[in-house]
Image (cartoon, rainbow over the protein chains, first blue to last red):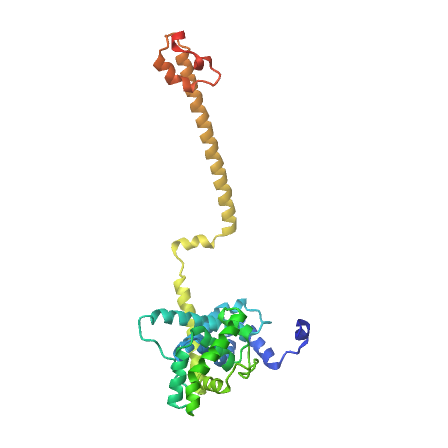
Amino acid sequence: MGPSVASERPISPEALEERELVLAAQAGDNAAFAGLVRRHQRRAYAVARAIVLSHDDAEDAVQEGFLHAFRALERFRPEQAFGAWLHRIVANAALDIARRRKVRDADELPETLSSPHRDPAESDELRARLTRALDTLGERQRAVIVLHDVEGYKHAEIGALLGIPEGTARSDLHHARAHLRRQLSNLRSEK
Amino acid sequence: MNGTRNDDGRSPGADPQVTAMLRAHYAAPQDNALWAKQEQRIMQSLPLRLGKVVQELRPSWWSGFAELRTAELRTAGLIAATLALLAAGATFVRDQAANAKARELAAREVVESTQPLDDVTLTRVRPHLPADAPERYLHPLDY
């Protein structure tokens, strides 16, 4: 799809509304910024959660991300997609937190991929197996598979979020899928 | 970047069962109260954090210089520094020339004295004589 076609595409009411919120927030309207937070925090959380290990760290990354976005709001051009811009900022905040956590936990016991918000239907055994399987996955591969298979991002977008080439994202996804399939194969044969 | 736009975990390499497990594991909290709390937390952090930044950037006594028109000051400073450097260089060259001239005159005075020149004196003053001075090429015994 060429750029000319994209430019002719009508702007959705949601996009218009978001643009108004951005302009108002840029003008110093805190309520408008709160509207942007309300609109984007769940997706921002999902991006952060794919990168960090825990729910608490994901919440911190979202908060850091919105703070950075607030500070940089003057430089944001309203014709851009606010979500894409914000998610990159949140991803960077999450990567920072993950790096800090890695250094801090270097001498401690390895952290589990705990999440206090789980599907009640998911059994403890299943959850434990998945957690163990995810634990043995590399940090970047885990982020890539979650962003792709859970959150629906494309390879190029994942590359932009994590600061890696698109080809690396593609390759990481392949390896992560193969790894999880191997690790969870026993589980499925038992079922 | 909103919405799901890739193959939705259905590409040949994806295992639908694993994808479903991942989605359950990484599902965002559904509790609206939690999101309201998170929004409140974010909004409350903004003025506090920014206030902290402003406090950290409280001006020191030297920060008054920053309020001056720095670009013009920088240009004026560069011009002044260049002029000072040129003046110092010129003074140095002039002093060096004056010293050399004084040494040459002193040497010539010694050489042209009516007193007989000994070997030691001629050796001492010889380097200070001009390159074309005949005394440079004379032996003391010639006097």
